[in-house]
Image 1 (tube, rainbow, N blue to C red):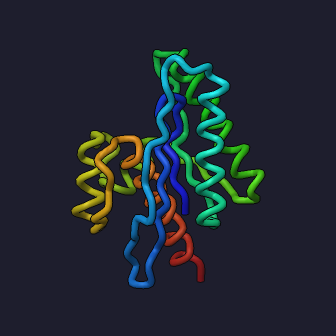
Image 2: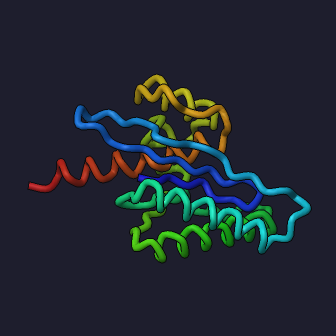
Length: 162
């Protein structure tokens, strides 16, 4: 499972696997950073290349992406929307289904509260879910949370199916 926290300046990528004992393990987590002075199309291409490498290396069953929530900063939202589009394209090319989760869904699944701050989410990943390899970089940690949210959703769906 690949989790993505999309952005043009920084995109969090995480590969999280479910173990047989119901626990999750972080296989890879990092932040793809692009210089502010780089043309946007080049920045998006860097995100695309990084995701394609992760898709090729790990061959996941799915890609989970944090859904864009429109705020006051329309310019920033457009950049995130473009980065999200690049993620969707890379996943489609790899034949991997994509599931999007709102930030509130991710926070609820990981920390039990939709109002959890980034630090609270990171602590919940470590303490509640027993993940020892949660990166300190916020974007990478958010990508781990998105992936774990998807794993929890799929586990809940499988357990609810007779």
